[in-house]
Length: 334
Image (tube, rainbow, N blue to C red; front, side, top):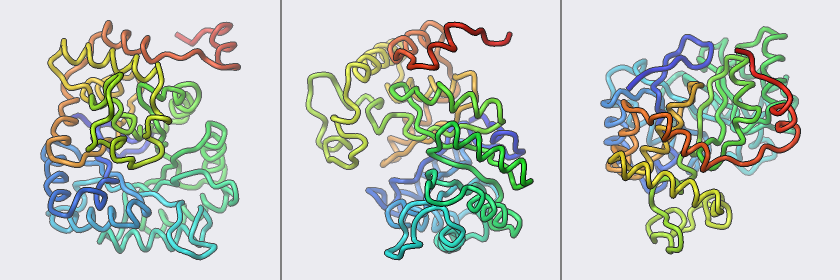
């Protein structure tokens, strides 16, 4: 597996990140230990979790595995803060109080004295971003956090955050975690250009669109009962949220290329992201070692230009204003 610098920082992370939202949600400690070791054996070093995944169970299971490895420094642990962690009025959001309390609980569950990457899980409209950034900077200064990132920010929110960090000389934002896949490409319109200009790494969550780009679902057929859609796991991934002519067009193109290449549909979908001109890092999840092995097979090969163009054409949607206006009347610099 290859490694990439996390934005403009000196931290090198694997080109694939292992998401651990399934830890404690269908994946027990023994299976998690096996998969985490499998990922590291393949060269992976970046693990992504959150303070609220499965009520903290994801962090606890990841932390238990972390205690079994010989060198804590050999892996990069990323977690997030924002969502509800209790019943009180201050158990939510990006206030200084909630951030500091949540990070301490995360460190306890993870069994470590620092996290490598702390991310704001969502923009908080009720808390001044300056308050959040100051609390983040203090956590870096005291050694509990090494690097800072954000997730689920709009382009203007991301740009304002980057500028305020620079103006106040706070520890910089080095990564953005945003949804990005062949059926969610709106991230390319403005978020990706901001990341490029500001030296911010893009970590792509749900690169397989909640399993829709894994090869499980076929046009005109019911979802398998053991799939996310079949089980009704998440509102975000149900057919009424994901299914469209665009989705089926992309799945058809992926299936055709996968068959011709002797690859799985998920491997082709992940490889498309890995081959993007910008160094995007997909965060994938898995419930079984076999799923993990399949996803790891997305590295060390490349789609050719014709295959990439086929997928780009299948997943293309008309640009909305003002993006289409700018695209029509300006030219990118050589």
